Length: 154
Image 1 (cartoon, rainbow, N blue to C red):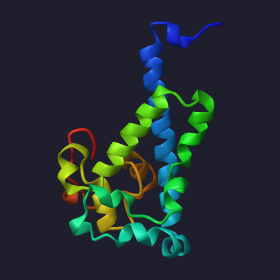
Image 2 (cartoon, rainbow, N blue to C red; image 1 turned 120 degrees about the horizontal axis):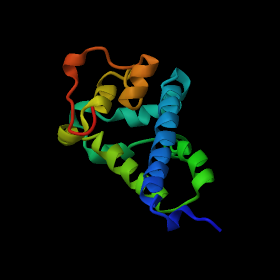
Image 3 (cartoon, one colour; image 1 turned 90 degrees about the horizontal axis):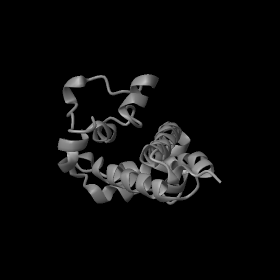
Image 4 (cartoon, one colour; image 1 turned 135 degrees about the vertical axis):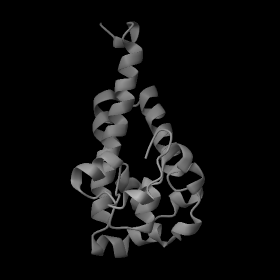
């Protein structure tokens, strides 16, 4: 039986799997985040996450949320998980997503990840997900002067 893991293509395949998990998560996170800002869902669920003062946010505030929010927002990894299975690439993607999520809620991390998500907490009608998704769907915060661009992200 042929296995990609026994070829020289494996590192590239591994990176494609990791990117697939992150892409699936990012697209679903954006869509679910927009839904969570619907007035009914916001009042019942998402207001807990936005109860943190944006001026005093720290990494641990990533996890200030209603109990239903975490399971809802991570459903985007399910399609790639069904396709690739639970393996090292899934664990690598999960680690990247956790680190990125934590860094996005702490102003001390803007030097490398930017302040795109911090601006969402300051202006909740904008910046629901990745910069490219907000740009594509017209939900990017319009005042470019307030953006701080990080080393790898904005």
